Length: 74
Image (cartoon, rainbow, N blue to C red; front, top):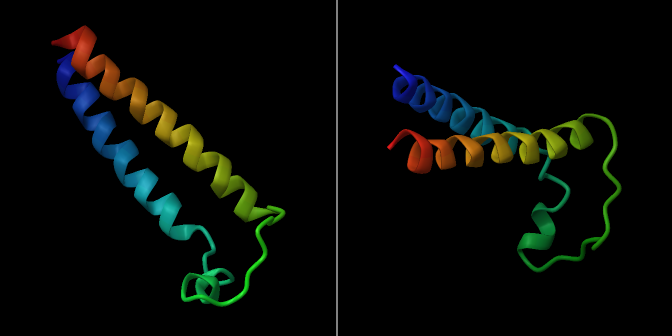
């Protein structure tokens, strides 16, 4: 039961991580990817800041779930 719950949570947080990363606004840096100029420092405001921190939180939760799956449950 516990292993199934951890596996389901891993899938959910993995999907959430992908969604949050896709939602981050990358349109401003698209030209710099192809060699155009771009600012090195970007101030994050509003929704971009929330998505930035949500990415770290989701990845940390996912790392804990993977650790639990490898070390504790098995």
